[in-house]
Image (cartoon, rainbow, N blue to C red; front, side):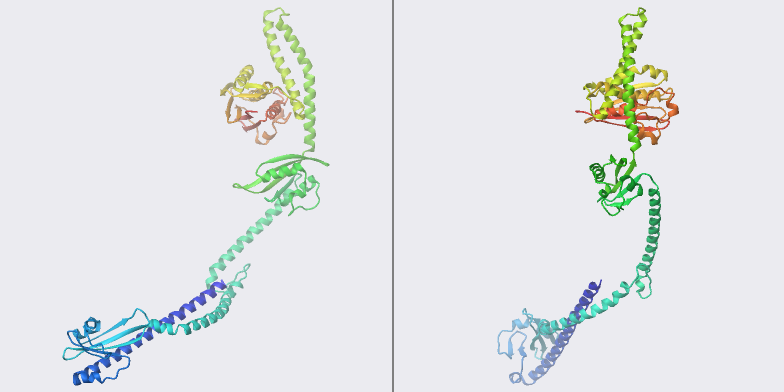
Length: 553
């Protein structure tokens, strides 16, 4: 602002001096020209009187300095010329002042030469004998006069500029001082300019608003600290550069850190490869989770990106103690393996008896049909047990299953046909829609995936409800959708329904046959094929399970 004031003052002073000089010179030049013209008029009238009285003799004895006197008649003949150029005066006859003199008795004119250094002024007077005497004088032009004083003018302008700089600096400081002296925290009009009143009012209003916001922010931070410090889980907030902004005591305890990490890198809390990969995935915009095995127990780390529209503004890390959960999961795996082996022997016996019935060792004709059903169901149960054992081994990554091309639509139709009796008992309408999608995988596992989803859709459906299986595909992905109109699943249980033996309503589940392994088998079967499964449900309206399997693998 100070520099602008200084530049403005210097510019105004310079322009004022230049304009003043031009105006003064113009005024002086105009006055000078008027004076010369008046002298020419007087001189012309005196010479005209002398010429009328004494004729050419008077003209020959005239004493002239820089003026030129010309006497011409009406025909343009030069009677007398003080410069001795007596000849044809037709060019002079065309002069404005001469024409005006012949017409009105007198006339004047000014001629500026191309060199702009001088100009010629003429005055003509008509005599009684209808001849004209013309007097001409040459004097310096306005430009020539301006050139004469140009050097002094430039020197004067330099002095004016120097003085203007000094004055402008002092004036600008004096102007700016009241503005610089304003207290932004408590802006007051006293000692300042009245024109600043709207600005000061706005500053006061803004200060009050900022004060309220800061107080609210302080209270919010205190509440946040109280809440997070009372949590057994850990929470960490970091900026896009992974510098810790907030870290509660739970995170320090779970990660075994003692120093306050606020302002430091998040890796100062844990520098393991799993933790780094999990946090980096979140910083890249992807939700990530992992389990850290520490000396004090197992810690599940869930890292999510914090976004504003499409811009990542930070990372939120949630840490939980899952030591007991991991132990329970291990126990469930062991239990599944043990139960599978215990069930395999009696089921093999059932298979043998069914084989005897089917071979005709029992005489009644209708026994053969029942025996065939027993054998078919027993074979399915044995395959199921084998699959459970295989899935248990899959958890350890120690087994492999033969794959084949399976038409998912035909497989779904086969499963629904097997469940016709169960559906009829609850009056559930079943339907299989979609297109033929061939997927390369384990027929047994794929069948169990669809069977368990459909079996649950019938068991947990309402009487007179509906069950639909839809097979479709998008580029590189096969999609199996199983939807029912049953009791639905509360939102807080959705994330846990795929856990082994987990039941949403234990009291109700006891009345419904099942081991609690169905959805866990679905999850592991889908994972074996490199796919994903998710559930969407509205309590009281039904549930939709969506299985996505990658094609071409």
